[in-house]
Image 1 (cartoon, rainbow, N blue to C red):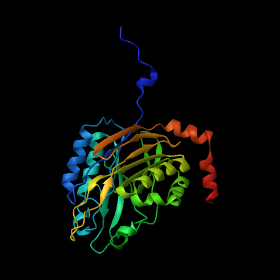
Image 2: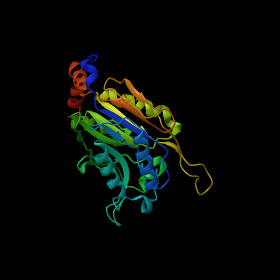
Image 3: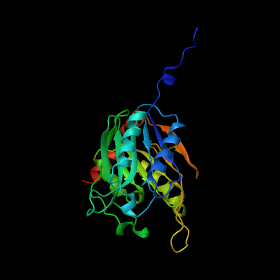
Image 4: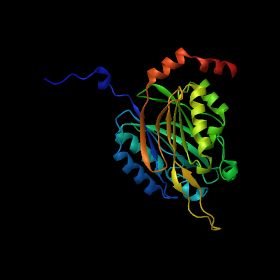
Length: 279
């Protein structure tokens, strides 16, 4: 007789998979291949969610002529990845629709069936690093549904994290998951972790945040390139750490329980009062 399996063990929750890696500078094909290889070794199931860093196909480069996904090569890669794995994918890329258009730092979300779910342009450009001199800021939030959970996801990018009012707008629009991709510098590692936990607690939302590791190339004047900390995180709506990466390439994964989110928001409806205060 085959031993019985508890019902709870038979039901697998959808998982979020965060691909934290050392981005190859301005080399989209190399980065696409690296993502595929890392996900091949991860326990990814149909219906799961895959999150890639900001500008995952190029690194945090301002060389828009080279990094702009004008051919759609990276978008095609993301659509194929979603179809091949049967998952929702969100990833960062550089987009400039025409040669006269300003470039935007975007998060693109896709799903199986060649579906483009959302495209969010980073609203808060990293002015201390000069990003605002090369990119145009977005002017609206975006949300989309992660089919396997029924939860509404709000994309965000790196420096956006420092601006809680942005996430308040997302909450008002129905966001239940914040999915953020970043190239966050090691020098401010403590800020990264503290702000992510704060965003989860104040919005009573899951926070899924992936950061890259490694270092940018040496600059033309001989100074070292920027260094990145990793430290990717999955945080529950109560602020509990569900998964956390160190500073090396890896895929971290965590289950996302929609029922737990609804139960917490019902028991402690501070999120509703936050929305009311924004009116």
